[in-house]
Structure formats: structure tokens, C-alpha cells
Image 1 (tube, rainbow, N blue to C red):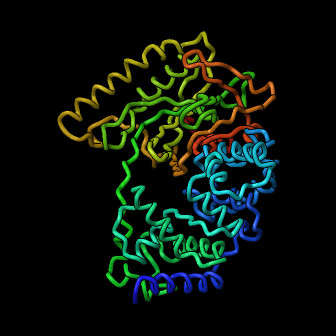
Image 2 (tube, one colour):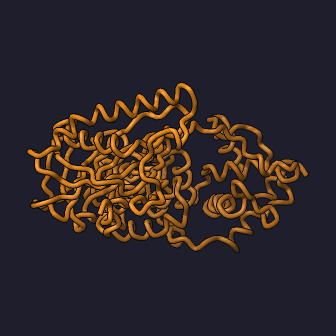
Image 3 (cartoon, helix red, strand yellow):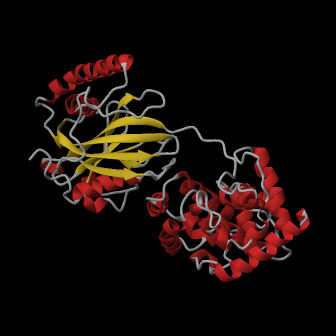
Length: 451
């Protein structure tokens, strides 16, 4: 069978399969360009099952481009909370405002105009134009490149720009006339349900008979993909500062800077414990120097707090960083008590620990038995929390007006701090890991620390 017949076999059989097996997804029930757009942005590096409830809530609150464009930014981001890659939400709203200003609130149908929208790349532009407007535009993402690599036995590295161009040209040639909407969704569906990354279901694949990769026994080695650089490990110390007096029942949180990672999101105060050796996971810091360093960091920001003990271990995975978190429950103290002494001792305690680490690393790898270690995760005071949402940038200044939040400005880095209670959690956007930690605190998960 020649290449032309192989292409025809692929297109015909794939469409026949899709019309019988397609999933009932909320954004597929209407050919609404706005719905298609929102769903495609949400689906970037996120599973369908995760996206569905977020999509339904988001569309319920922002049913039109105009509603999204005019909504308070913090409200939009609160509706995105937990999806990760928060820059997607910021870009989506910015693009909605572009559509209002430049296109009268109607999604443009011109490829260049769609591509010019904030946060819209080649794949998303192709998906919008083909699914919403049935235009014969390719929509090539990782799933699609995997399917085409296997079916046509393409050995080119899919991480290269030249390979993407090749795939887009090939995908465009495969679209049957007048069937772009169904074909592109069928191609995405095949990659998601059948031609999966690690265990392709070849026996149930509608195009298996002419799949060159399967015939050559290459279905498990394709596509060719250069491995990404592993994320940088960091060990961080986190403070859950429990308020006293006027702040009783509240915890201290801070807002991140206006630019950079997780921009303007709210979080628990935390500090970098020590940079990890290149290529190695950052090891935990012993409790004594860790608590001293944490108290000193808070003191430098103008807050007196005494660490009471280890509350939990946690991990948060970004695309380029992995945070290993030691979370300590702390108690707010009066500025005039002994906290200045603890702060003054922080650097000495930390330096001693760092010196021990460096000396050990110089002779051999550090083993758990050779270094002072914090409470083990199995003890009553050490639970484990792990998240793998890759939070991106976020621009979301909270507009909470409740005076009880006690807005403060730290001395050291000028960040904004607030004392919050459980009732404030639905007003402010938090990265998923801090949302879990704070929610666990208010639920009483750390009540037994050092009791």
C-alpha cells in the first residue's frame, strides 16, 4: 500500500471510529468558539477528567467573552485555583479583553487574528479554527505528534521545531474536506484513549492495520523525544504562624511579588533552607537549625514567632523546580520577648548545619544515618502532602476589604502580609500546596504538634 492509500485509510477509519466512540464532553455539546477556546486553554498539560468540573464552574461564572473580560481579575483566578499554570488564566482574560476591544466581542475567524491573542499558540489557534469554525487547520499537540510518529514511522525528534512543522503539514493533508471539526477531535481522542504514551492499545486501534510503527515493532519506542532537563530541587522551610490575642484563630500569609513565579499569589511564609547539589535532591535540615532559621527569617520581616515543632512534610512540583517543604507550626510572640535572641542564633545554627553537610559531601554521599534528621514522616507530628500541579505565573492582587485581615508590609523584602481566618479562603488565590496546608491547619490537622 502506497503513502496516499495509507493516508486515506487513516482518515476514513479514524473518523468512523470517532463517530461511535467519542466522549460526551461539555465543550463538545456546542460549537461555541468561546467554549472551545476556554477548554483548550484549560486542557494544556491537564487531564480531561480534571478539567471538566473547572470548565463547568468557569463557564457558569463567566458565560461569555464579555463576562470574562469585565470580571475582577482575582475572581477569575480564584475560579482557576488548583488547575496550575496560572499564567494561562491571566493570559485568557487578557485575550478576552483583546477580543472585546479589537473584534467587538466576537471570536475572530482569521488565523492571524486568533494567533495574535494573548496565550494562543499554533495548536490552540488550529483547535479553535477547526473545532469552532470547521476550518481545515491542523491542531498538533503532543498527543497528535505521538500518533503520527507511530502511524507513519517518523524518527524525527518531536521536541524540534522542524518536526512540528513537518507534523502540521502532514496533519493538514489528512483532514477530509468539510470534516475538520470531527477529524481533529478524532485525532486528539485517539491519542488520549488508544495510542497512549506507555501502553498503546494497538489491538483496539481503528488504524492498526496500516500503522507502520506497529508493523516495525516500534510502537513503544516512538515518538523520539529529547529528555527535558530535570527540575531543580530546593529544600524550603515553611511557617504556619498561629495568631494570638487580636489575631487568635488566624494564620499569617503573604503575597508574592508582582512578577516571576506565582506572581501575586498568597502563600505561607517560607525560606530557602539550602541550595541542593546539582542533580541531587535537597536533603532535610535538622529541626533545631531549621526552626532557628525560620524564626530569624520571620523576624527579619518584622514578625516575632516561635516555631513549636514539625507539622508535616510536603512536596510541590513545578515544571523547573521541585520544592521539598518542611512545615513548622509556629506561635505569634510579643515583639519584646526572647525572639530577637532566637533570630540572632539562626545564622549560627544554620551555618553549623551547612558546614556539616559540606564536610560530609566532600568525602561521600550523605546517608540518613550520618546526618541529624528531623522527625520522620511516620511520627504523629509529621504527615505528608504532595502536589504535582505546575503552578505558573499569576497576576492577582486580592481585593479583600475586611479590615480584620490586618494588611501589613514586611520590613525585609516589602511583601504584603495578612492575618486570615477560614472565612477568607474563598477570597484569595493560593497555589495548591499552600491551599492544602492552610485548609489542613484550619481543619485541626496539626493541633497535636508538641502537645
